[in-house]
Length: 302
Image (cartoon, rainbow, N blue to C red; front, side, top):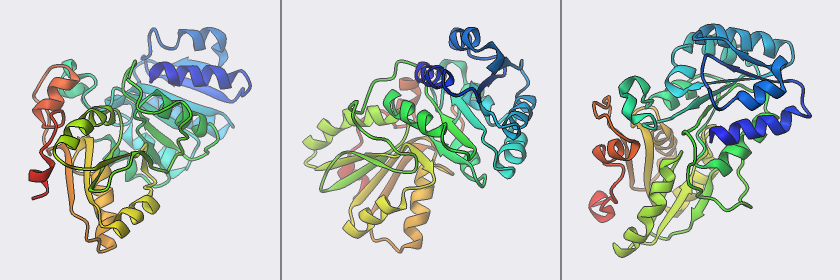
């Protein structure tokens, strides 16, 4: 996804001289091409995330389209007050990009895991929150972000993620995308964990279930029209996300369905309200939290 991000900016910067890329001492081996081609629109601010958002605010007020890139735990959390006041409160055209969402940097430990970002980003008024599941989603989200004046937080994985979409699939910010139809249960997912769930589907079929799968590339605004359809159909719903069960996509969906007095059975799989003391690759940590192995859906909904 990082390569997709840079590729989109490189393509569009040729025709849009307002695109500006900032990084607080991150992105080595990622941004060299951009920096060489557009040296006047690239700035490495050093390890100073708060100052970086301040610079981005000044650029946005001057008519630029600043993108701030860092590792996800630092791109938003270390400069949260500035993101709140300079980006969200002022409703400026600042795009905050966080790489390595969830447990992508698993071996680095809890300091580099990020399981709270949806919660702290979506609570900011004006802030759009996205988590692309693959490079196809990432490309279309970044292309649309260039035409969106609102502040955005975009959570990426790292690189070389497997595709879950066909090349002609159309992704729209604020809209869900149904990857597979099913009659018995609808699985809702967001981010790169969606690929693992596509691998669940054959096993779930063996459990005698017709299982649908829908991906939410956007956490906020929530696609309530799609949820209304599920409410009307009274389908069982399983929400899966690589985020704390508090404050993520699942909580938003459940809160909305509660207001609608929905009759659907809902189950939510995510990271429990605890930090990971596991150190290892992403698959290892997901497995420790019960997010990798195929669940027993019949037992889950019994």
